[in-house]
Length: 481
Image (cartoon, rainbow, N blue to C red; front, side, top):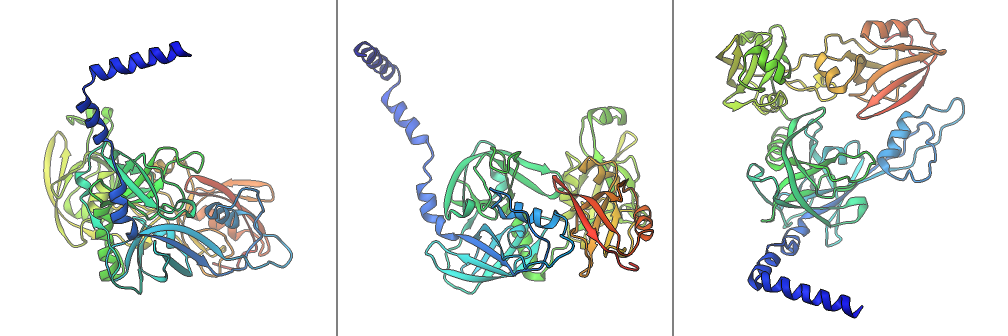
């Protein structure tokens, strides 16, 4: 042991002799110190809890370890209802999230999914004060919500410029993972402008900051103590943090919150095209210098693109002076353009670049099927509410590609008296009745199947929501839709 210590002492002495003391001190100084940032900004971060009043519904299975509210909600909605027998009221639903104060008079930013469906919202400050909050507005497409508490003189965050973030730069998250208030985690910017499946309006900031349930809606700070993003999502195969977290850039969030506060809604542009990514092979065959732009598959009749002269096989390479490097760029650029604006469009057509003028229309909210992007055509077939009390539409080719599906029907509306435990945006894959499995391919086919059933028929639907799939059993149909 004495020999080992002696050798170690000689090695340390040799290392110190080679590396100057000032270099060692410099290395120590360059390690990040987050203490001042947390002291200055931590009190502007709040804990948000929500409750839903008891509702009568089917029984929820008691599964050990299933205390997570989002998991329980999935099981509540997708386990077949018990028939017959009385149904007990469901206990209050509680969820936890984070938010941050953006003005001294009580306005707070968070994620829309944190407050979605809440009957009561409670905001808890770091000084233990608690306030009831009301929703000023929420936008599901970008997952941004603005809430307000009745208070003044509150500490507010400072805003930074996310466009100036550099990959590799240190960033800090403050939030309430699993309800542990004012938890600080740190990491680096892993990538910028990330596109996620079915998230067409947000160029996400990717980081390796540890984010877990409860962090949603909390701020992402740069090292100057400025908010550059809102922590929103993680990529995980386990449900926990795996090194991939995503934040909504604060400039996107501030634009949304301004519209919500001014008008109570968000107006987005659309031009009416179905697009796809330009691969290297496509770029070669079209004679484009490199893979870029958005290839137009089809143009909606009488749409702004149709009126502007956009043609199928055009490759849109820029919009309003902004370069379209990937097909996912176009929905974001068009969506952020105010409806009614006169914009310029640059297309690559038959080996040449042409400039077109286009008047942007407004994307209607009721067009959404799994967050349909601006520029994508409306599902071709929609119908009034059917015998299940729901409205369904057919998936577009682009939606099928994005969801990796060959068929399916998307739920676009659910009537208040519907017995079907489905939501807007759910995709119905198959219907099962008396052991017969039928793949759902069209609205007409589905409604014909329902029309041929007895009023007391029991059917099961295979439903896809996000990355999860489950079976929903429904007992009884209406006489007519």
